[in-house]
Image (cartoon, rainbow over all chains, first blue to last red; front, side, top):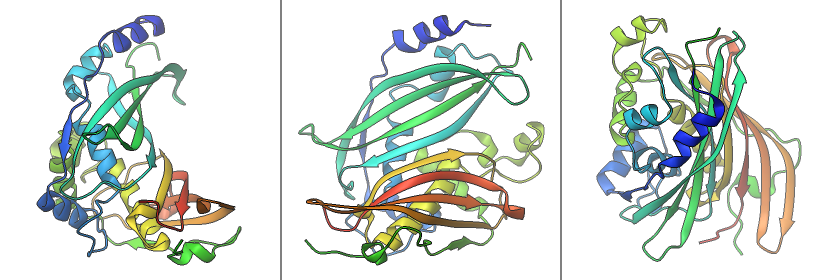
Length: 148
Length: 145
């Protein structure tokens, strides 16, 4: 199994470029519907759009991320938690970009004894002028299949 | 500074109003997967769910279950701009058809020049009262735009 130091090198050696996001009105309305969100706000986007930005705009695909983390076919990628910080709400119709940083790589034991690697990725959402609207820290967990 | 929402008059120890979601909708998971660009098949392919040993029903995205908390906070805070911070730990899965209950409690109220910040513990309970999310949140009771 990859060591923690090797994992840290793998994850940090390839910067994630981030990406761009436009909150289209139709997507905003459709997501509101799927989230059972109250109808009516056509100006301020649901804060969930910060999470959408953090998933869509890492600049790497899920498959590429798994490869960076040296996952094998039997390892499982889990979503451990989210920290959302909203400085100001995103706007429906707004154009944004993201800045991505790996903020933590740790290893611990799961309750069943399996190795659990924890990777924290912070995604900041900014507008064209560089003004920050907020950020999301996602806690990805990799449950390793070996060394139970 | 205009105060808004029920959170504006909240005090430590107050319970947040509860929000119930009856029968989490599998079609909504598919829509959320499209918007999120989340290709994990456990959200839309029950064959994969079975193979993964997770049962027979689609698994709701953790972020979507978290969005139910956001809905409660938005309603209670009076605006989508009211949500300042939300921290969630995902502890268990929610499946298609499950009922979930969202709630919380005020743990601190802080007044400053920028307005009032209401800090809460929040939670989501699933079937049989199993806690699926625990966490904390901060709500602003005046506009910061």
